Image 1 (cartoon, one colour):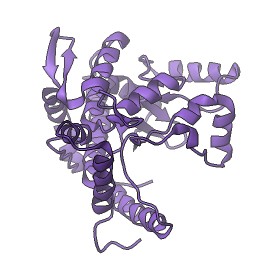
Image 2 (image 1 turned 60 degrees about the vertical axis):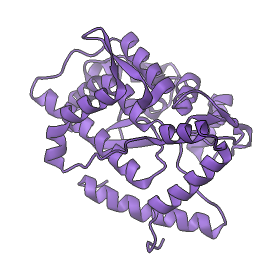
Image 3 (image 1 turned 30 degrees about the vertical axis):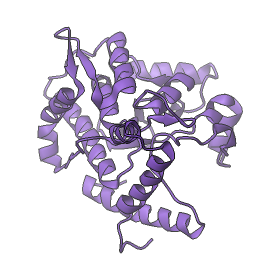
Image 4 (image 1 turned 90 degrees about the vertical axis):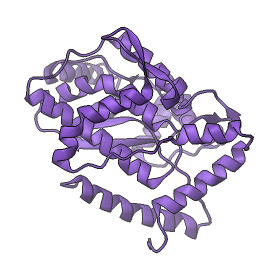
Length: 311
């Protein structure tokens, strides 16, 4: 738990340095991407903890198949009904955040044609996943969770693997839709944007400015567009009934979150091209997937733990 985003960044730097030092002492290199371009999920080993061994027992193939990596951002939100209002409100912003973060075009030695194959794997394989319908208030949400527990569907609320959810233990709203980022500064910029979205949704709630939650079918359509085309594509502005460039939707998101970013001092600087765009342009230019991934490993090491930082 930290009291500011800046403090969270400092702690992240410390943890990164320790992690990379441990890996390198054992002769391993680390890369931050949404998927490994060719690793076989059948070779994946499930960590030996009660939580993950229970998932392995209960989910079988599903948990074995999920060799994917993402960014989760937690932000404290006071008030149970307020937290649900924030989750409901953020549903419409999630496809934009996914498009911005897209960083998993390759799988099984192939260009998948998608910008975030990680999302396609995770949301189509795991149960109780994707973007939930709006709940409206904490009581409605709590009744649903209690019903799942009572009917032996889940044993804890973290088995609701939605792209945005309230976290009961931490007292946070957790956004978990974005691909892992190859460059360290990109992960900080993206996390700052996500934090700003949570904070702005809370401010809007306090001011009585929350729009009506979007219908599920509209969000699902934009989610697919983000998975398929990322920032190279278009999303749908359903209020106008028109396609909008994903870049324009990002600009609108930045404009919307400006008050929260100003109050919290958040720097949501993002690159001109995200990870999927850079990788696909290199691939279309004739570079091999192996070479592109080798560069991702080098970029991760260089930007997550700059020279002179000791783990």
